[in-house]
Each structure stands twice: as structure tokens, then as C-alpha cells.
Amino acid sequence: MFSIGSCVHLFNEEILLPHWIDHHRDIYEEMVFIDHHSTDSSVEIIRDLAPWAKVIPSRLSEFDAQLVDDEVMEVEAEFLSTQYKITSNITEFMWHDDLQGLLEENKEFEAIGFKAYMMVDKDLSLPLDGPLWEKRTHGYLDNETALNSRRWRFIHRMEHGHYGLGRHHVNLKDIKNPDWTILFASFSPWPQAIPRKMQIQSRISARDVSAGSGVQHMQNLQTLDNFYRSELAKSSDLLLDKTFARNYSSYINQRGLT
Image (tube, rainbow, N blue to C red):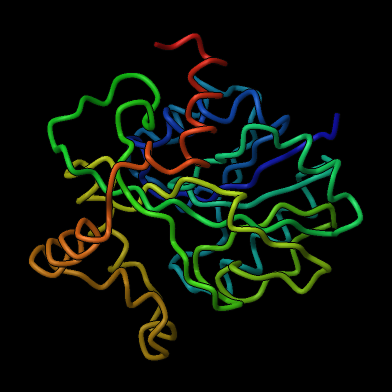
């Protein structure tokens, strides 16, 4: 068995945090959370649900893409001691039913890339009890093939990820396969996630704004609704997708859900 550790950076994530911790507590041996000075109950939730996890206060006062990546790599190197490491957002859930087998089969590579199922809620009345993915199975597989697609995430066995900007590619010997997937809670849970999407724009650095980085976060309620509707138009029932359905069935069985 390979030991796996995860680094996650967060700011006011009290809605998704319980779901993220519950989903990953049996996958990741170590968890490190970089807290960007949350003002909600995020840190208390971590202390309650994952008391063994490390919470590292970010040294940054705003979100600057390059500085965030630099900090992530420093934290990976200093605070994660596992054989494999992965850094993700709190919206990203590992979605592979045999991660240990995948690592064994590809251990000659320094990093393994995962594509994302973009989760987009169609039914806006779904409750938030139980695993987030149990009832929310609507969305689409992001099939963007560009090398630096923002939906690639990587697990690696190096001191840190040697990431390119945004951590969507790595300067390592890597292998990628669209059948290896994560869930990206992009518009799920919806509409509960609206405040989360709206809050970040006031914290993006002037350098990133002038460079056009983080433009996806610069939304008002109307443009955000338009964005949601355009994503919904691409979406369908993911239980009809063979890879999604296989992993879904595996997770349901592991948890004794029906």
C-alpha cells in the first residue's frame, strides 16, 4: 500500500468541507489544509471532523495564482511525508475506485493526471445530507485536450508537484488518461454554492486581474446564472457514463448505501 497525502487550500468552505473530509478520510493518510484566513466555521469543522489534519495559515493576504502555487509547493515539501501527494481545491473529489492499483501500475511515472467530471445540478431541491455525489449525478466529462487544461489534476511522488501556473500541468514525467477522473463540484451544490463563487473576486490580486488570470471568478449574479445555464446545457445523467457509473457503484458498495 502506498501512503497518500493531500494538500488543500481553502477560504470559507463550510458547505463543502464536511463532504470533502468524509469522502477522503479513508483515501488520504495525511491532510494539510492551507487556510486563507477563513471567517466562517471552516477551521472548526476541520478540528471536529479531522482532528489529526494539519491547518496551515496562509502567509498570503490575497489570491495571486503564482504565489498560491509557490506556497502549495512549499507546504507539500515541508508538511506532507507520504509517498504520493496531491493538491486540490475543496471542490475536487477523487473519483477512482482503485487508486492504489492505479499507482502500482504506473509507478514508473513521477505523476499521474486526472480529468474532471464537471458536476452541474439539474434538480435544485436536492438535500445536503449524505455524500455530496450520492444524489447529485448530473454533469459532463470535461474533454478539453489542451496540455494545460484547467481540469487536469495530478498525484505525484516527488517532494512537490513542480507545477505550472494553476497546477493544471506538471514539469515531471507524467501520464494522463481521461478514464482516470475526479469530480469537480463546479455548480454543485446549487444554488447553495453561489456565495462561495461570489466571495473570491474581491480577494484576487491586482496582478492577476491585470493579467486576466482568475477571470472565471469575476462574476455578478446575472453572469453567474448565465454561466450555470450554459454548463447545464452541456450536462446529462452521468450514471449513463460507464466510467462514472462503475466508480459510483464502487463507492456506494464501500459505504453500504443503497
